[in-house]
Image (cartoon, rainbow over all chains, first blue to last red; front, side):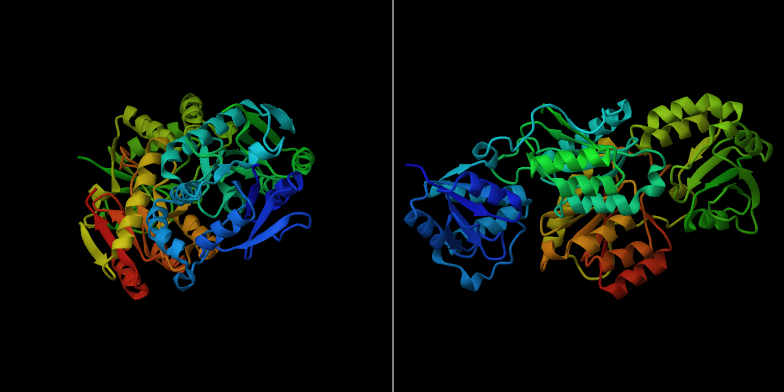
Length: 268
Length: 268
């Protein structure tokens, strides 16, 4: 019988999956989301992949999901177990090319242990959006033009594994998401672009990198994204239908509606 | 006999060209760099291109240089003269695609008046760098790897007219320059990336967009760039030899030397 383990980063997503899958093991990394009551918990460490695989096997785990946001952890090589000593040189090498390479290597390490890696969007219904206007007013023609330009930027950067978001207002690129994430980019736009924008408001596009493996680092937006986009004065947000997680869907849509921000899902 | 007009934005560059060309006309836009004593001054306005062309012609101007940093001015159409009313629809259209399109249209408007558009780097010797290490310590191998990745980002974005700078540290993209400019990006890196970088420092690459017309919006660095890069904790800066303006070269190199930051010029 298949058994799932939730490899938990930070945020609401690991808790949501745990709630939908009470028989799943909650794999807790130090400093990450605190395990909810109701799921079996296994304590794991990035420094000890061998012990992690052993613990998961002992718990009867056959498939895993990476859920929640992760930042590159600080690793202390003196704590590595033999398995991690074997994997680390490859991880160190591929991470020079960006997080995608690292994440692909991590997926492959799990698969080599016979574990199936699942995507969060396969495990909980309604985590992503259907195409259409989800909240707020209809985007204006100028918003569509800005969105198309933001999308071109993401497409051009796709093979380089830079980020999953970009902001364009009246044709001017005001923000390109980097490792710091969407909210940091939106704060940057809020703080720096008033003088440049004048009357133009601007659009955030959030989409996976072309060819991205959605089982890991799936793009996500939530109420905090909406609040940050509103603070940055944007007219709205465009996401890919089926490919972007909606963290706390109801609150997200209500927040957008209240802020007068459009939230539009487009078929990728 | 050729006579030059300096279409002055903000910063040291228009003053530097004026000092090197005392016979040149200093075309002063409201709110931009204040004309130096020693050059003839013509008052001009973005809203009245017809009057601007007339004033330049009356002063015997045959060639112009765009110098200093410009932001998109707020234009009041009720102030437009007939020439500007004729040009404005085209300017409005092309600016939706980014500043490059707008600047190309502006160059072309000057050329259609029979004026030759020159580049600042052609007018003052030593404004750009020769290839080689200009200041600071030799870059480490890891710095060259980060610089190569930052360059790939700029190359990928080149056709999209986004920006002329990118910061990468240990393979992670930490900043992609947008319309707010290099210094704003460096402040963003300083404020947001400590947790991500750990021991890695990172490199800023500053280069023209591929195929960029260097007669307008030529990339530039100066003492403020060095100070901002040092505040962001970077190991150094890589620029294109011959294609990036060094604002106040001596102070720039001295500031880099003092901050322990390398400044490397590479043949494009």
